[in-house]
Image (cartoon, rainbow, N blue to C red; front, side, top):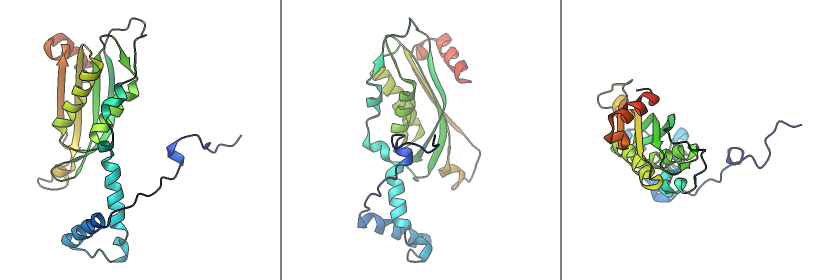
Length: 205
């Protein structure tokens, strides 16, 4: 039997068609290259404007989706399970809206179901949907928690995000190796100290 993937194995094996890049977008990247001190017409930079434009279309593809859509299909048959559901160490990438520099981190997302649960991959999809936009970490944390709270109507939601910011590590204060932590607690995780301690302990904090 062949070890080659079949045509039905998904987008990972299908070449993606290149999107057309508007002239004004390419011109803007050329202007930035020139302003930075290089020559956009030299050989190594000729194709850079189109590459940068397509890369940013990919970085910011969260604008093209509604993250709450991932929470529309839920399940009620959970065998009476009524304890915390937690997905942690979820890697993500975003970009700072102030300098458009990378934000790279991980998230822990937990909720205490009331009547229904959602597939665990959907929690990561909600995170990525909001992360793939120009962001600040505080807003990203709140958006993920608020989305789960509004659409799953659980007893509690807890989101903790840790990330490094290139706008701090690669410029400005030039301080690498620093992590920023943000959290949002809702429902029982905000109101009940025991519940908050339990979910934080499960997250590893």
